[in-house]
Length: 468
Ligand SMILES: Nc1nc2c(ncn2[C@@H]2O[C@H](COP(=O)(O)OP(=O)(O)O)[C@@H](O)[C@H]2O)c(=O)[nH]1
Ligand SMILES: [Mg+2]
Image (cartoon, rainbow, N blue to C red; front, side, top):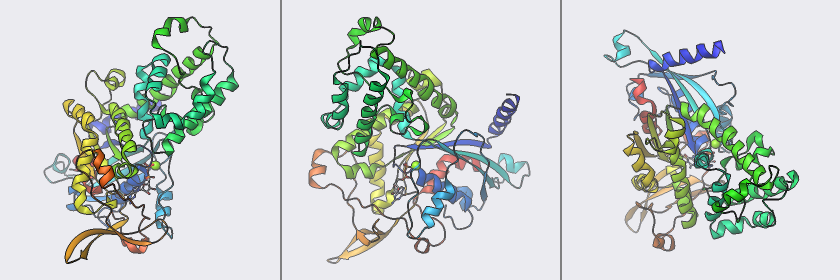
């Protein structure tokens, strides 16, 4: 206890001197978190050597001296698998890093030379150290925030109405299994476990089909909670909020009360602790969005991503009356949102990609700006897997991309134009979008360093002011 107090104190002092920063990377599954963090760590470790970071002033001015991994503080949080990710990229043929599930952490010491005339520079210091704590956690966990505003009954009825026809079809196994369940009957553990299994499967099927707006988030990424009763609840179809009084009088061991208890436990022991122990303590965050992937998947998935992002962004809405502020009073002072995998489109499309990202996050962005949270939108490629080319066609120059497909085939493609605004129905019928999954560049092909697009711009926004 005493030791942790001392640690907190020294953290506070470091932070007071602006020398420590907790930066979190989030985004839905496959948004590109692992690739982003891997690249970020790589670029900082190779700053001043192979890494190209011209948009980060400290690097451009030669003041960034390097970065070293040091032991992290939270011993209960898994280490971010940086070495494993680099091994995958360096393999032949190169592979994308394995997906991670759950939260992970890595601590860097960044050495830099303060600007002359700056606060630290003025003290005659040759170099200074910024301690950067990096976190990677699933954006799916943020989809659970609104769940804190419900009790079991209101959540249950809300979930029912949000089931679209296609989601219903994907959930038919669960709907069949739950159809005969009587809320008043005595709960049978085995039966609830079985139905919950169906429910989790329905969520997984929906995710496989490209849906993102899914609750509860931990059902998709259960980690070490797999099989625990806390994850064995589900909404009860056919309930009505007007039934509250009648439902309250049901026996304690009824299906209804058993599920309600598990729901409350999930809120208290899973959702809240994440916000209390982690989220609240992040200084800055970057939210990654696979806009191009959704564009490629078609209108229904794109809509769904839009809804999921609206929910996810509620966790960043620090307006005084917002749910997050009422419950946790978090303190993030800066936020970045980024459309990832920009190397999937030709460079002149990158501006459109940022516009589209901003359109997709339209309402949440307005709320953030209203609450005076500094937020900036980017398009980037953490690990660039293609090269931009110009091709000549009938005397005209046209942009194209060269890359290696996952099957190892060299291709030259023009993937399509990115709409500037939320695509209307004719976009999908008329044009669509042809997306290719590329293999990372091989070690030989990428030469020195790890090629990226605008990682340095994102870094400047996220940590640049701490390196002055
Ligand atoms: N071309 C390209 N593909 C990327 C990039 N970042 C991620 N990807 C692809 O997206 C997949 C998911 O990325 P990952 O970082 O594992 O996502 P996470 O689930 O958010 O951690 C990877 O396996 C790659 O196929 C990028 O910068 N360029
Ligand atoms: Mg990952």
